[in-house]
Length: 357
Length: 270
Image 1 (cartoon, rainbow over the protein chains, first blue to last red):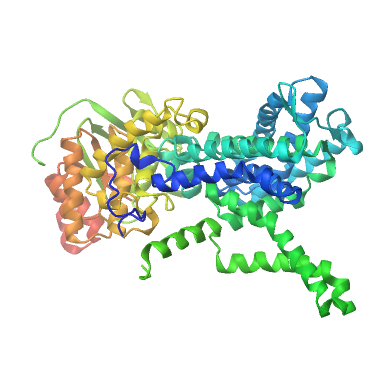
Image 2 (tube, rainbow over the protein chains, first blue to last red):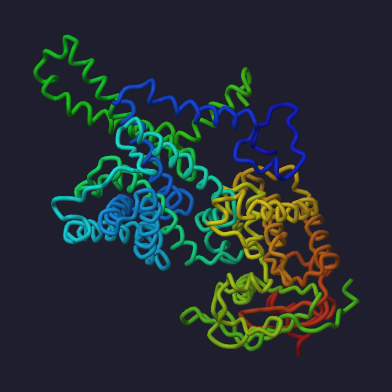
């Protein structure tokens, strides 16, 4: 019944400051810093294939964190997240191409554009909740997607829009090795911002709105404001992620931002853990790596004697897709609270070994 | 305690409040006055409209008629979150904690209207003064935690606590609002004797040492009679009695409302 937090023996907090740190111990903080520093060497060690996956994890992870703020923390289901991701990508490319704003500034500005778009789509949240709101965001997704294909001045229509590489003082981050650092920087920055948000006043207000909106209102939380603000904040993350995506690929096309991507964002945060900052990243890693792992398995299978059976060799692609689906379903059955929860349990296991509690 | 009526200025005045749900008249022109520093109780049988009355004061229901004045403000139509800004806090009859948050975070939500950091300054935590503010309010919350003796469960998840403790956390959250007027909806429901004694002590302390005006709904007559300064009795949405505890308990209408019509009582009221 006492505090659920497990601290190492002898670690006593003597100030409130020491009790509100992001990482529970100095040791975990240092490991995390070391891990980020270690990531700096990734481009030197790994090949393009790994780099590409890492960059994908970074921009999708940023957008997933945004969705987790909206769905996991504020409790508002959104089916329109990929549309916001797209708004960010197009807005950044547009500002850079048409107005000559350097990409360096265009990315955060694109985040602001997306915030505005998100708050407009989020207006119904002031009135409706739950599944009804999900349908309203679905409408938002479809409207924005339709806008993308019609507004040729903004998106280039069916041709898509070109996006220039990220540059600082004339130094272009135009290769995967270089862009990796940009992506890593943004990933760390956005996750630090997100973590801070969730341990300060407005983050708590979001969770309060989710857990019990009636008493949140009695506690002085303006429901309408926070419901719509949550859309805004969430869209900012999606916009930044989308802008990074655009400048990484160098080309933004209308088809990238369909409903399927929205659903994938949702599955990332559900698998990672709703209402957990680290869960958003873990879920993104899972969802990006799972198809690759399955691809690898399937290619292994093709090399065995089974690969000669026509029914199997012809159906490998299906097997891959179905096993991805199966893995997700099994995951949800055995760990409905997500990877972040599993990580906590793992930590507890080592801490308490050989006892179970 | 009951023999010392605090005559002060009025902090809450309810005038002719009527509340209807379709054809059901939950409240029929109820009026009462709560003075500053009073411990005021609302009692009545189940379904009498006590919680509806409290909901009108805290802003969950909008009464169809009448006026509620709080400290010179007409708050009849004000939204609940603005009432919190004015200093009205409340607890709920059925627990309404933020179940997935820690006890500490629950209490910190109570400080919401007293804090200034927002999603921008909060995100840059160390730079915009958010940290200093968070720590300052953390200190205030720790005072409340000490007062309500819940320091051992500070980091526990609120939704997993035992019932009595959750009631106490809810009180802590309402106290964190720094209210001048605190509305308690059955703070002792479902508690054992020991917990009730503790809760009564907290309420009296809040009233006398923290200087909060308390409006309380409670079914436990022993507690109500012991600690209240004044009492009103509701029955079927109407006020049937008002006054000091001993006046109210001897009121024939009250006996009738609680015990029903009886030959003996009919004689009394005749």
